[in-house]
Image 1 (cartoon, each protein chain N blue to C red):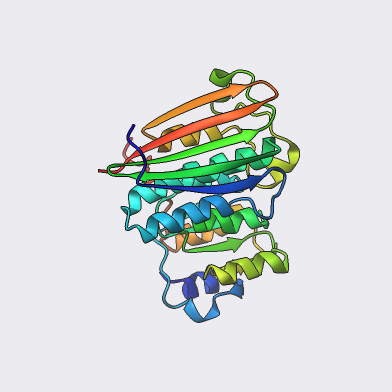
Image 2: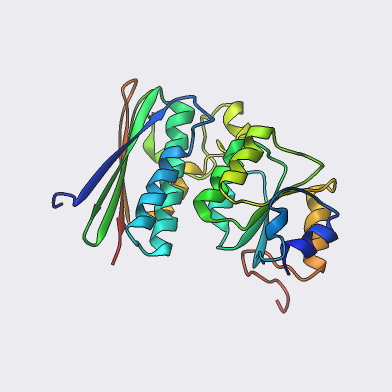
Length: 142
Length: 122
């Protein structure tokens, strides 16, 4: 991967349901200002929002990093949190460890990671128990 | 069909966006309380019908450019959520009807779902 033309950091606070979605919203606005194709923006927005909700719902703190370069957009979601026990299981639709509170917010139905995968051209998930999780999402923008 | 006609069919109260009801014409409708599904199964210019009234509904709408939101079962979001919608120029309506009846009335009036799926002619 070449050095990004642009890299922006958006912090995310675990448990802050009022601010949840702000980082993804800022990413969307940034891409719009850059004149990125609307269909690509939609994919990036949905995946970023789900990633941000995952941090808010599960982790203590984290951040979304937006990297834009020629022909490719990357969003990296990393957090300090419990980590994912079994990534393969977490990728299955309907599998969830989220709280009732998450469900009250309209999330936590085990659709987050599968949705993120659907929206991306490539997704890489690394996680370490009791340390945190790092998700790299690549979106081709031709 | 524009939001004004939808508002009349549902006898809905307008919480935000009275001044734009004539101009906004949703292409399809989605009824759901699960925002992850709303994110995945909708297209652009979608009207969302939901019983969820927290800020994540407004965020979801922002993320995928929903046309408007109708709260069903007489629900109304708290003032800070209404304010957030106003800032985002997102029209909000509220009807006393439950989700099923709301869907039925709009479907009968000619508004289709987002999937484009049809079971007729099987």
